[in-house]
Image (cartoon, rainbow, N blue to C red; front, side, top):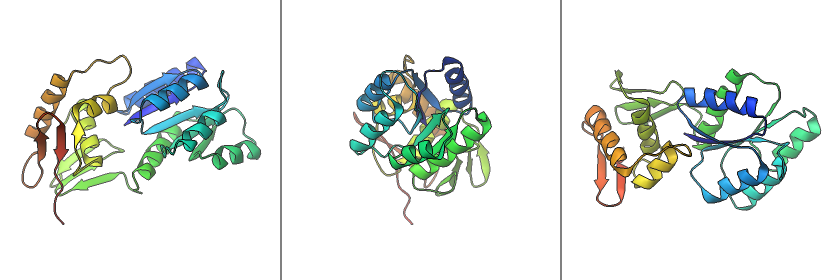
Length: 224
């Protein structure tokens, strides 16, 4: 999961980054509304936006309005020091999915992030099932026939992306963009290595990751 945090309080942003990265997400950070707008316009790979309303240069509500005007359905969690009903209504009316008033519990924020990403994928459960393979997005645990599969953090990230797009082609560039934060360099060759390791751990009938030469990978759909 890749998350964009738009927050000008550097201490709070650092806490959010540490918490979300510790839970296995790739998280990037901007400190102004204009930076958030630029990041959202140049990348469609974010799974969630955590948006402070009191941003410099462009107010958070304006960032949200422009995002929804472009037709983006990315889940948005608003953070604000203003806890009035009017502020909440404004944010929700402009397309926010959830709202948290500062100060807040990081544990509660993690739970809301999990709920929003499940909702964004059209599911009410944290489990993704693919034949005998079950992946728990909340616990970040994969099992096959009820037995846990030992996967590294990077392999879990790859598996999650492939499961969310089962039956569809995912290019190497898309995998890099979905899994890596800004400034983190992961080559296409490294992606091939991670895919190879993942295959060795999960591939068995009917689970198969197909290579589309020169294009990318596809977790093949399993017939009902």
